[in-house]
Image 1 (cartoon, rainbow, N blue to C red):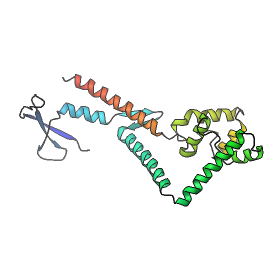
Image 2: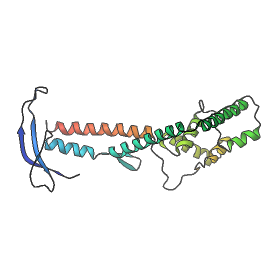
Image 3: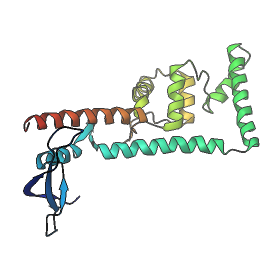
Image 4: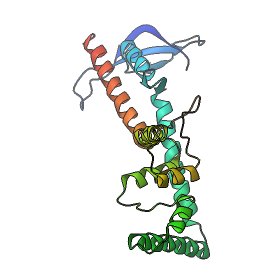
Length: 225
C-alpha cells in the first residue's frame, strides 16, 4: 500500500445535523503524486493509528498471524466444508444407497459386538480397517473421527499427545493401536510437524486479535482527545 502524505491543511465543512458536530476534512496525496487532491474526515493521527492497528499480529506458538491471514484461513476451511457438503449432495442415488447401506452395516456390527455376537477375529479385522465403535458417546472415538477427517489439528492436539504418551509407555489398548495404525497415525513427533489450525482455533485467534486492536486504538486515541 502506498504511503499517504498529509498536506498539513484541513478544511471545515458544514456542521452535520445528524451528528451535530463540526466535520473537518484533511487533504493528502499518495507517495509519487504531485498534487494534494484527496480529502477525508480521517485525521493524520487517526490514519496512523488505523495503519498500525491493521499491521498488528497475534502469536500462536512460534508463528505470527495477521487478521487478513486468519480471515483467509477461515474462509478456506469454510469453502472446504461447503465443498464436502456439495460433493456429498452430488452423489448419485445409487452411491447414496451404497453409502447408506455401509452405514447400516457398521451399525449392525456395533450392535452385534454390544450383544457379544461378534467374534474377536472379526473385531480385530474391523479395527485394522479403522472401525469407529461408538461415534456418538465415546470421546476417544469422536477425536478419532476428527483425525480421520482433518488430520493433525488444534482441536485434538491434547488427544494426539495423549496417544503418543500411551504408545511410548506401551500402555495403549491394542484395539486403539490397530485403529490408529489403519489411519497412519504418527505415533512419534515428526520433524517440522504441522498441527493445522482448526476452524474454532482460527475464530478464537481472530476474536483475540480484534480485542487487541480495539484496546490499542482506544489507548492511542485517548492521547489525542
